[in-house]
Picture: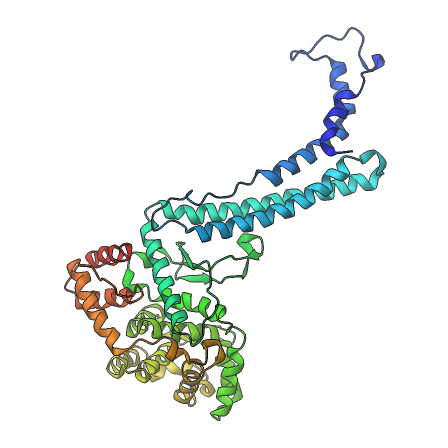
Length: 456
């Protein structure tokens, strides 16, 4: 029997005369006590019916998002993002519907199933309720995520989207061969916390009920958004996704190990850098994307107390902070920014003199310059198939001519003029240069930065 026919079954149950209480007075609701007894006797079928109806409504009630539901301006979620989320919600709904059909079959035939049927009904009821909660949780996540594009943060987050897209475009256009286009593009959102973070495309997230993340998410705390010169972390987070989308996530550790072996370095030294490969790649790609501005931004982030910055952790996936900055300083030297590198090195050595480095194991400190060059040779300057036969430095590299563009753009930000065709990612560097000149109020730079990205 179809579960939805249970209501007709209940309505068709005859009321026996002996079930009625002789001389009973009607209740205040107009129903007599016999009617209450009839409802009690039908409690189990009605329970099964309610269970089936609720499960059906759970499965069919989740609405998809309209493409213009969160606005239609430049900061609004793109159609590709909305369609990807709707596809995820539809996938979850199909799972609910499968369980709902199983529950309906059991609920519609309880009389022939006995106690085993009742137990099965309760198990399916619990399962349907859990699936409904998971789907609602995913739906709520995207309501909140997309809802940020309708408030005060909308234009700021839209600006981060454009910087992230520019980073992707710079890499994809520099590849030696055409690669499939990653889509949808990264999507930015704001959340409290010390620093930015990212969730890669395809990674299974707890907030999504362990479903695959449909597009890269870039989290940027508000305190970074209000200080655009601190947004060097955006290319870093985007680079994590680029590494994954290029298929380098799994192969890079092995290549680093081979590079260390070829350089005659210790195996345990190579093992450390293999563990650090994701954060190392993101740092080096960040430097290649926006140049010296990335190194300055990195100093802002990792430049904490001497104890914290030199603290060694045998299981950390981030390079020890006191090592991260010299790694990127060396990359600056090798791509033609010797003066900037020397200035950064003097500052870093003053902040963290040799005595501070004692916290780092001696075997890690041993031949550190050679280790750093081995990492750069492998990650930045070695050609590979993933880049179409090019190296990362040949795919994308910040050059001295780009620094001249950044300086001009900084002047334009100071004056409130258009930055024209300047690549969006370079605006982070321009904001840092403008701040360093100290000729313009920080708030003026902030407004000009977002105004420039709003015009892109």
